[in-house]
Length: 199
Image (cartoon, rainbow, N blue to C red; front, side):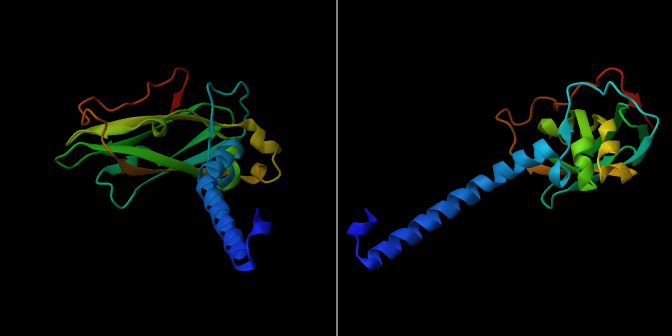
């Protein structure tokens, strides 16, 4: 088909197809990169687990908890405890607290990562508030649990075996209220059994 075009038309057609191809790749890059991070733990993306680890080692890991808000989010948000020490493979239970000081319902959803990034592949969350939207009514305060463990296989990783401390970070963003206007209670996961709570 390009052979039927004159040189100027052919150049325009080639440039247009390059632009369309680059646009398509750019559009697809975000979900593909997100999928890649979730599978590999690259960029500090944690893993999701259905249950705790069957192996618990004597070696311990210090886990620090960090909280932040996007610039347009009006909540107050903080970890209840700033750090804890767990054994590799041991299930830990931590809490974050959110408060809506405004006079309107606000819906939010959290993004998360861990640092150092090499630990993302080995930091497994069993239950987490980041998997559901949270709606806080005016003046409402809630505590949200995070159940996790550090996979013992981290000691077999050439880089991961030198990690002594992991920081789990959450950032809350404001999202659109559900159709009911946030009349329902906040969606908070139930605390799973056999979790160890640290103060």
